[in-house]
Image (cartoon, rainbow, N blue to C red; front, side):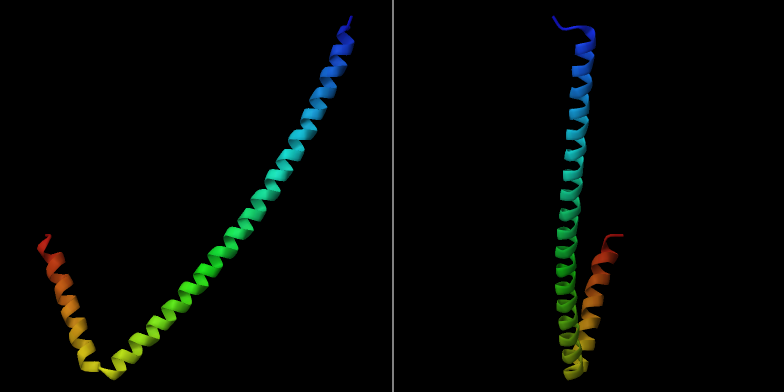
Length: 92
């Protein structure tokens, strides 16, 4: 027959094992979270660099277009501004 002292000892051992297991689980989750954070940061940085490159290419393209056709560019800008102004002005 188990005594109260035996039950207490078993319970303490079980709690110590549970505490160690929880510590290991938390450490593993932390490591996994850190690694996933690094992967997400790397991917976001790559996407940002790609977007920056595309934006710079688009800017160069627009600059070349404006330099080649300055009058057309001014007329297109005026027409676009007029259209947007008309659309936004009609809502009020």
